Image (cartoon, rainbow, N blue to C red; front, side):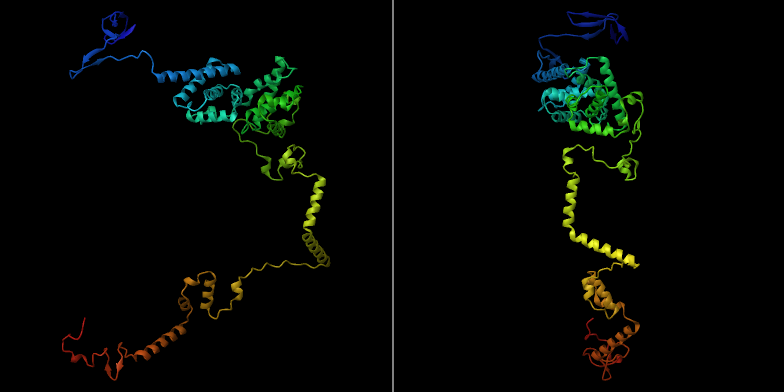
Length: 477
């Protein structure tokens, strides 16, 4: 059946293998034409010029396509090999998901300058996190025999290239309960007296899962690696069921150091769930501890409540500190006594002075004499001590401005003018008039000085207004 545009319906088709025509079986319209020939065919275009018709099909692919496909095939084989060796459940489904990430990495030239195995492992780890598989990044680095930090750097760079840095697959916390069954199986099958009972293994796993759930309610999951929480939960669960495993056995399974495992055990011991016994933990597995469930706020740190907080009600004890480095800073009773003797010898004078003051205060108190503490006097500046009192208010003001560093910016004469009284102003005015009269003669109230009954105009002669003849030759305006 083929769709015919003339009949506007799906109609039976007729194909001519010799001519390559596909026609409609109802109306006979040619719907497709598949003509292949080794000889070039020329047709005329609208301008009347001949041009080559059809398109040339290459007999083989280009060299770039072959190299590109070879890179993709190599990555797929590497992913499939890692999946088979690590026994990742899912088979080809996980391989297909990881291969799609690998194709995107190749298209963005992410494989250039990097080993194919590293990129393939990073893509497979993203696929495992997306599918919630019980595998950590250290499992892939252990298989490739490389540092987990090298593989982690490739993983972070790949997330940035593929724009997965803000995706929930990367941002969401990894649930530690995903790894409990796998770690339990590895732990119970490592030793010579390995437990092959499936029911017993399930009991240990269930106990560890309940402990992990309690840790999550106590907000221990936030900011901590899931392997450390799984190791602590598995260690407690194994001991509660009578399996005498050491911390070294747990460390070899969960791939964390013994110090981290010890720290997680101490943190769990400080919670309310840490005080439960194995029997009470089985009966009340749903009892919540100090944390809160769902989206509620985490419990407040008792150290933030001060010394009177309930969390600090217990006396301070340092018996649980087993760190060798911290132990060097703590003294025993003998060392504390020696240090006290050394300190008293170095501060002997100060101690004697304090003892004398206390004895004097006790003696005065016995006599009934009350000694009041005097007020502290403010220290005066050296310039203020050596300066003499000012004679006038203007001088005092200028001295004050000078002490503040403003002496070079103040006009001393202008400051003096501010404090002059009315009598001083009138006296200074009369003094200026007398000095003016002494220099230029008395004033006739018209602004002119009289000299022997005539007016002096700078050598222009004597005369009145009637003597002016109207000619201004002698005046230069």
